[in-house]
Length: 309
View 1: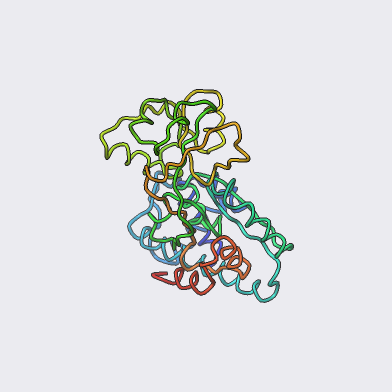
View 2 (view 1 turned 90 degrees about the horizontal axis):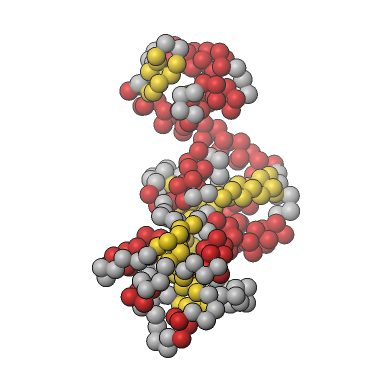
């Protein structure tokens, strides 16, 4: 048994049983991948994959039982490498952070700047995606740290830690009637206008929908987008009013828009930091986490990642 055999099995599942893609991922040939899998099956005495001719089509029951062990062995192998690197090159290496657009655009820039000043020899990779994509990158090992508001807490394999709370704001074009209101805005008032906000599954959209539904209201959502910058653009064009994350608006930067507090209309959202349970984090990764959320010390993060690992 060797690690190349284990990697061949893991990547076969990740690549939806397409051995051509597996070969490309592992920088080898398709016959080489097939041989590695067969040799492992022969050693274990069970077939891991269901086959149709030479094609793999799924996991057998023994394969489904073996896969978590394969994943754990490969994770431990990676942890061993990282542990060695932590002591041999404490201030060097790379860190991959996956985040949603809102977090990458509005919450992380100052953290990234401070991290780079503190660890100039660490290469930082910042990937953006949907909350589910962020979770997938963590689960696959592609990312070390994930930051999102939605989805992360849905995965038992991830340790998720709350970082900060935020709510939404309403943005409107200059001179909009809502700017003339002296009392706090209401949901009923918002339903009088076309609304532009986030897509389902992004940046607290569920709390927006829940608030309207709870009062039996049916907002006219004419456009949805993944990030606040796009929403702002179409509000500026006069297509409707926008509902965006409060962290995404700034009176100085968004002088072309009217900004109205909506903290009383929608439930608070919690931005969470996600880590794969059982994964070894380099020392500088803990520093990145603490720069982002000072309450998340190394002791707190280590304890969370160790739970049910």
